[in-house]
Image (cartoon, rainbow, N blue to C red):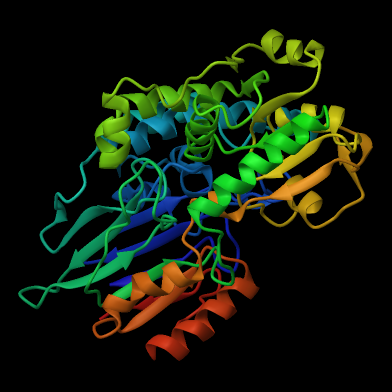
Length: 457
């Protein structure tokens, strides 16, 4: 088997890996490159392969940096015609994410006087190729090639991909793609599946150089940030990813409200996408862990509580401005590189009574990254804005495993794995994780370059 790394090489976005075996070509993920803009210039470049020759795509999960170039795959050249595999939640999420992202891409394209990287017809064609599969079922691609999806615990429906391959009557080998691994224990999802054997491993390293706060700490910090902002008479802004982060936040605020641990103030979920995603979460409760299932069975709607307002329309979003502080606004995008949150940041960042709470990864070049790195002034929608608001961060809300959890996940495979490839991380995090893996597990991780290929025996 041959693997070629075509994205997420020494960067966090654009996940895309080409597998070739016995005349069959598979893509693992097909993600959008993201930087300061929602869509990076690299998304306009032709793929390093012929899309029409790809037999299938297997998705680890729905996040746009793993799925966002699927419509481009359909569009370029003669177009991809194969099947797109993923869990039921993953493919339901991808369908609405691609349509939602198209609105942002069209807006950016108009600003830069060019066509968007894909269109509605490309999205519709891609959706027609979806094929839903369940965890733990082996799916045959060819006589000598198959795969199984395991629960990654990252977001609802996220998967670790186990690829099984053989040559003729030879022994079956296994290559494992971690996708993005979950930050367990997750308040809603099941624990990340442990893989005890692999011949080759391709693993994310997003937080390879960091440790997160634990669940208990993050709840305390959230309560403190909310209480302090409300007592200051300010506005709490939370840029949140529509999938998982928003739902975890709603569940936690629901608990604070029900236990009367925070003052009652208006709370706005100002994200049509997050509202649609939350509806999908309600449809797939079988993916939740047992504790959350019990809470729901008791009659508690964990995504609804007094004071919560859903803002679907632009008019509802604009009306938030007329509601006096204190108030809480949860809106996308999670990196402040698009969506409704940037309108609220433009309005409220310059007031020291207000707070911006970062609860997710901020990619290099994004507005969120500039703010968290201490920028005193930022440009939002063409306007220079002074950053005087309080800037807070809670790492414990990350849906990614931190350094210790990444190493613990690799540990059961250390006796069998021949090569470990590190992807989906910034260079510093990758190097730190590689050094740690070498020291603790006596393995020599490889950090591949873009376009680099390796033969897997």
